[in-house]
Image 1: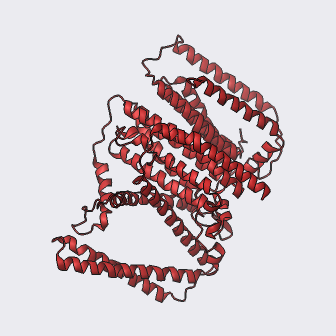
Image 2: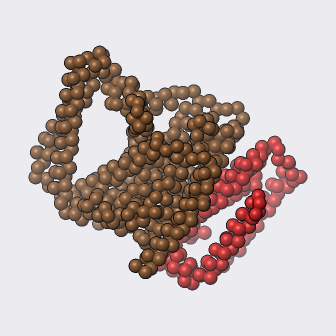
Image 3: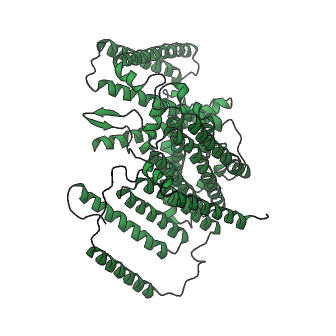
Length: 175
Length: 420
């Protein structure tokens, strides 16, 4: 959470943070609350947008754009693709055994837990190192990915390749 | 603050006005390609026809007043959201496309784009990948099997060719070394042989094909195949929502042209006239441009007047339409005279401190607009020339041919950058 000191542009940043964070939480709740699966998927897309906005406010430009590009633009498109192919109508979905009271109680308990965590963290003192102006730009992320973190980078690429091969093997009609 | 607002509103205004022009260009262009005349009947007061441009105005009025039919069991929220998403996503991309070289005004650097993002190119890719949602939601929420099929096919096509587009962009990125569009355009310089379409011809070709697929234009027209799917994913939309889809398609075309000309054809660079040259010789440039405009209007006016005289003398149509050429010819001559008066009165042009920069920016923006319109014409030209791809041919082309070609291009570019 950014510092709440009301001073010039920081106040604007605080307002925007609350708007985007609130949107992210509300739509994330909407993912589990909507009956229609496409409404849930779309709520998740909006949630990703809001999280991308929070990234942008934290000066992580590259990550913000990549979040929209990869998550909201590719992964969720495929999710919605599959949901549309199945073409579930809300009437066809079975109603689970949880009652509404139980759901409401679960939400209240989780919210209280989150507030408790926030209260706990506020007691601690965080010391953030000062970052220079090129923090979060594509150049810096690229440099780090190819020098300090090159091994995890290559490892993740191989992991993605394994996932692609697994998907192709599962979906092929004949090998 | 006002400057940012102006940078948002002016390109928006320009795009929304290019769209009727493109509709006219498409109908007249397709007509002449198919050896017919195209629409030329709509007129103002029976006399001003402007070669069919009034038909675009008629289209707007017609689409506004049509009955807005909503089918019975649609999902209302997504049914109304889909055209809105399609249009706004198409318009959002214009925020990062620069129209002219950055200039200094009272000590501050002004870039001619609404948002000077560090990851400008990635932003365009991200927003383009959101364009799939408009199509998918439209196809699904219409409660119609044909439009669902059209929506699914279209979204599969769009995500396949997004990959190809990204690969083509990566090779440009490797050569320019930055994601900001201004840097890429400035790195291309003003000489035409240094522009990226000659330094990366494979990437240019891949990008053009991918852009055709992204904007659902022929030859990748299957989602709205008029003879197969009865207009595909937007079959259940009427009046203003259909107009929004229609406009969104043309906006995609304009953006594809803008993006193509920015990445590969030098963007706002005036061929053979660099920014410093233009700023140094601004008054001569202004005089030459004004003289050119006067010449064009003069010649057009004389031509139109002679045609009008022939029309009236031979009574070509027998009613008020004969006089149109005379009215337009007189108008053109009047503009030529006005510009001539301006040129002579302001002959010793005193431009002041910021005058040269404003003149340069205006000229570069005009050249950029010209490039956009040229590529839009290429889009229209290809649409009425090539037949449509079948769906499996389309997917095979995207994944089995263009993807390896894009990867090989990246390898070749990397090798060339490393060892040349």
